[in-house]
Image 1 (cartoon, rainbow, N blue to C red):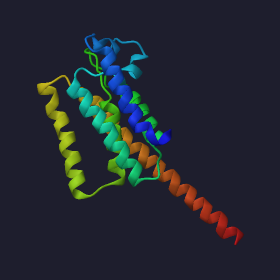
Image 2 (cartoon, rainbow, N blue to C red; image 1 turned 60 degrees about the horizontal axis):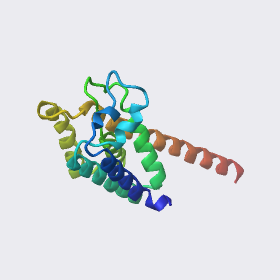
Image 3 (tube, rainbow, N blue to C red; image 1 turned 135 degrees about the vertical axis):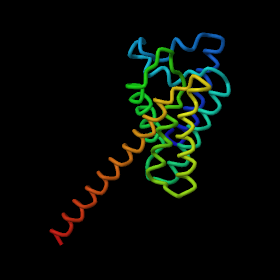
Image 4 (tube, one colour; image 1 turned 30 degrees about the vertical axis):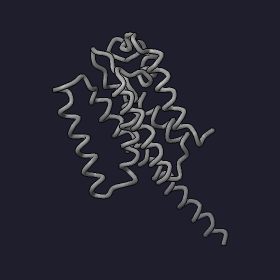
Length: 179
């Protein structure tokens, strides 16, 4: 089951898109005046097929890469990204409803940035982040949630690395004392 979570999340995104096709999806999005539970539902609705395609591909690709490059399971990666997607809604509200799982995709981007810092990758990430400055002039993209989620993804991996380092040091001290 855990091995197929990335397929399940993409399937859920497609199913919700098909179920909400032809409806006002902004109802499920969060804004400055929306109910608290819409901070969860906004992740799963998308405005059009291209929006769905880009977000589903981003989720699948980043989960695959992070799973391959780290010791984290798909379940941990997915749940972390979804939680960060929800936390990113605080402080990123607009009057117009925000929809789509791109906050979680940007959280995965941040999680990967922490572990993979080669020059070409950093340049690509900087390009994506600079695009967040330009997007608001041409579309209704909520760049605040994207930027917050990248920062939260980096922060999560930083905290985990410090905990791992601390536990490794404590284990070494314990083994050194008893040997």
